[in-house]
Picture 1 (cartoon, rainbow, N blue to C red):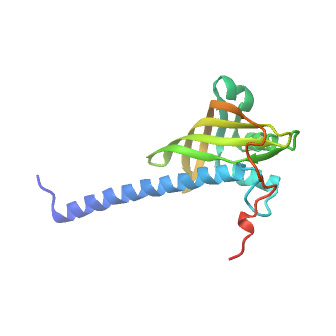
Picture 2 (cartoon, rainbow, N blue to C red; picture 1 turned 90 degrees about the vertical axis):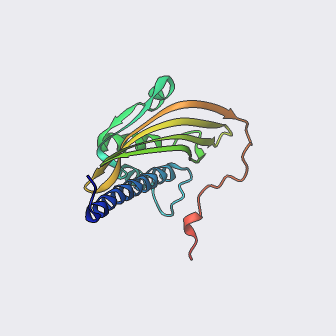
Picture 3 (cartoon, helix red, strand yellow; picture 1 turned 30 degrees about the vertical axis):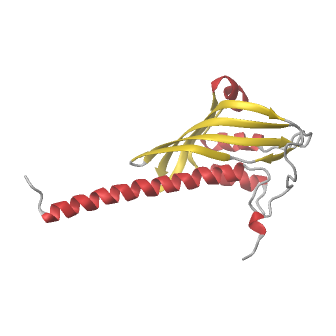
Length: 191
């Protein structure tokens, strides 16, 4: 049985609409994970954002029932498991507490992206690298795998699960990086 011209057009519109929705979801998810990583960078490249504001902005990227967890023999003990808005606030408050040695730099790099969208749910996988540089001269390069989940909440994509496992942690020699800024001026430039 052949489709009529109207049926073919309707089918093509439906197919195109589904593809646009998937591409739009993928773009939204990229923006969420990129925003999350930027907000976790040290120094924070966002002018005038306090630590309390930073934590609120991070948690706002998550659904109210979201989970954040470190898994595997190394990250499970280091990062643990947090659930719900209050749990996430507590987790990030603990992470961004002043401590000695002070963290001078933490910059996030994402690679090996794989996003799968199914309706109003999605999963994303990435490999993640980040150098950590401290005020005592110590530094490490960390690599993790991320396996995150996302869902639409009132028509807006939110992260519903952040799961990370250690790939490796490598100490870096003192002085390997030079000219480490104490603050970011990226957002301070007026056009």
